[in-house]
Image (cartoon, rainbow, N blue to C red; front, side):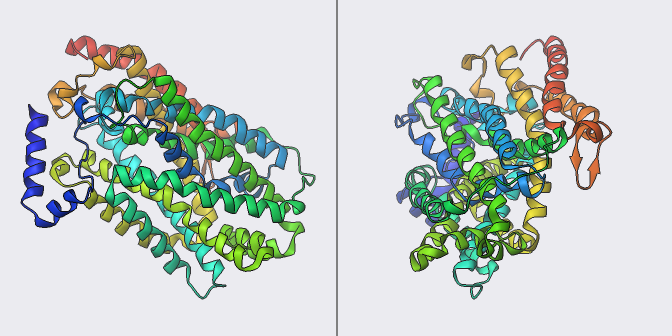
Length: 482
């Protein structure tokens, strides 16, 4: 009944606004976090989710994340690529699995999280997720702006390039589910072509120069960054599958999603590592890469094909728009979870808010990209690991992997949802007991990490599972309900 009332309030608000009515007639999606009822879950083109994740990850940021292994952590090409492969094989599992929940429940990922963290408790992971999405958007915007600027030999500033990239992403995310899926289905094509050409003309320069033996600490620190890159998709996984028909096989959806994550990330991160170790032996690559300018490096790789290379560099700069558009889409949903009364406001309004936040932050942070990328990816993986552990235990152990154990009618009723004390207590204790001692960052190295390297995200996952099981069991016993 409450959901029906909120739906009526949302529709009434939009009908009273001329511009909102006009946008609805043009097919712009206004639905935010209101659960999608079964009769509206009619999309049977399940393969689309592969292209959502594929296009989100076929971009310059995936390429640049691979460069961190050799540049920041001092790994050789072989060690960097092996770390990329094995840790991504593992880290792609949670976001791909969470994607399968959307068709069964019709709820966005952070709304599902209320069934673990509670109506008010979920605000904490929601804030962290908003920070994470903003950070990734800033990094993508900087890379896109750098690439556009490199095409014009600097006559177009990074700042102007950033604005152009972000506005394109805004247009796609503003329109919503249908336009976003259409865009992601085609956005990857010119990007893959550009990378293939770059590899074709620059492949002769690639080599595997001798490197210092890899240390466990360097591998674990790089792995922590990779985890921060991939696991953080988990808090937004089901946002893109809530309109899918409930009859879809979970295994089918999982495989589509897993391959959509894994194939572009492993390929481009390994390519990034391979290219960056060759930079010192190729003078014009080194010149383009000056100051950590990844966009300039790609432009230098494509320079031998002259005008066509500049065109391809423009396409590469636009590659980040696919990630930005989908991130803005989830950002708009998270705002409504963060501030529940905003549920009656059309979703697309918050895509504009995301744009207004990202543009100035990207312009300010553009001069220190590598420092921002390393610090951000290293830290963001910690909370996401805790979040994944708690959500998985709740779903698999306490709700028996059964969608019927989620009463969708209670999604917006605080008294009918868990208190969230068990989840918050587990998260806070995990962070204090193991993340802080186990983290290895430029600005802080915990006592455990001094000898082991960064084990924060792995240990946080394990401890969160151990703590949440008894805490949640006690909560259920005292409340006599899930």
